[in-house]
Length: 340
Image 1 (cartoon, rainbow, N blue to C red):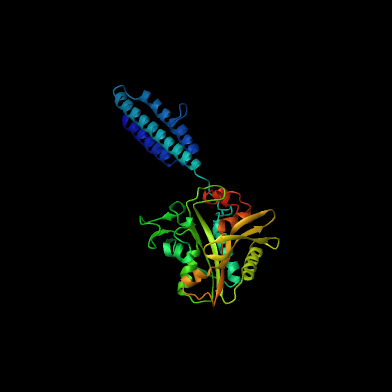
Image 2: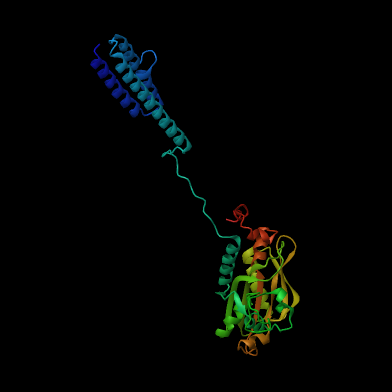
């Protein structure tokens, strides 16, 4: 065989093999191309190699050199393609196979925090009883948090250890700012700007430097109610609280009053509720002290009123059987998912 024919056959084989290796789509087609061109027994490159023996002695060095170049190139192309296919197979195996016939995945929807749920329910219940919602600032001055509520300067409720004061001035200064310790401040603000009759509830966060335990937390929520009109009595107070309790807990709930003392109500009572088992203190209540009515410009000879303040967390915990108030603030979704 002439050298020119040998080199031509070698070039044609190289071109065909290169095309076969590059266009192989998977390992099976690549292996078939390897056997066809690089097979040790019946491969086309092996057949061309046999033609070397028919060449003249002087032509063999040139032909042999070219043959080795083509062989190395084809083996290199085969290895490169094999590595690419293996890489693609590994990547695809790492990906989730998409099946368009499967139904779509539903996403878990969030829901309101149990405290927020409780607040919204309380607003709805008291709204049906004719009470509108009033809001006020959480940073208050001493006048609205203490003085207007008939809490004297000597009262322990004004002690720095029982409040979060925000100013360096003396806590006796009416301009001193603090985080409100009760939502009764909203009642004062409403009465200062609204003539009687007044029928409102105020809900929101209050702050007291209590050590966190199962029943106390330095930040908690209160709902306070205020009704001021002519001839308001304790009977009205008990009726409203009874209707409120029944609406939230059900007919089996009971409430009772225990005599107590608060500077801003006279007479004053502690409100207990019994539901399923035992009594639990829910908050304080009473008839608005005449001194408070006078402080906001009302005539205590013309109008009377009642006020009550209940802990929202206690109401929520009582209804859902929660025994530790700290669970409401740990943001553990496993706990919160129990209250959809």
